[in-house]
Length: 61
Image 1 (cartoon, helix red, strand yellow):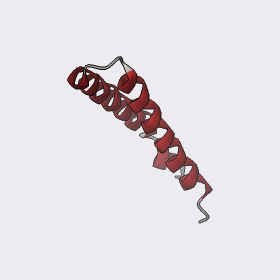
Image 2 (tube, rainbow, N blue to C red; image 1 turned 135 degrees about the vertical axis):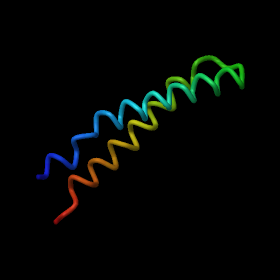
Image 3 (cartoon, rainbow, N blue to C red; image 1 turned 90 degrees about the vertical axis):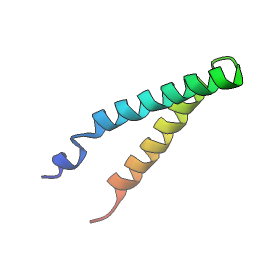
């Protein structure tokens, strides 16, 4: 069952994005900056996750 490998992907992405936003809020609060980290951290996390997913999907069996 190849589909079962990726069944939890949406949950993993939601948790990852939630943590990235939370850490961005805390970092912006700590550094007293404009909400740059709230935007930047989820974008970086999502980009890294998509790159990892593309590599996994292109892996030859």
